[in-house]
Length: 77
Image (cartoon, rainbow, N blue to C red; front, side):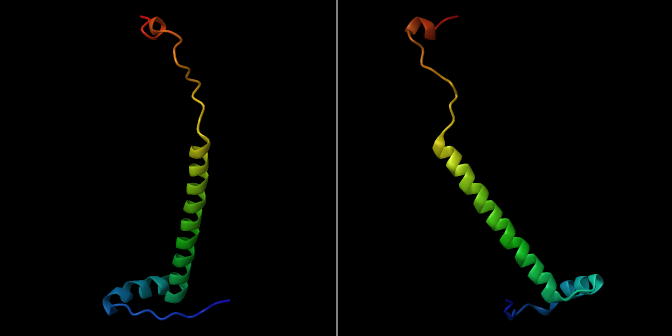
């Protein structure tokens, strides 16, 4: 399903996207739609990666460090 939106942009700002769209044989609407889709995909991908990273942090990582058994062991040279 698609829906229409209306944007108010400065006339100077819209000139370049119009030229870019015309060079690609596309409409400004298609350019905006593609950019919005990629923006949403990036944000969803980031959110997924962030959730995975936070889950890994919550699990913790075993660094196999064990406290020394004695003070002498700690200060061995």
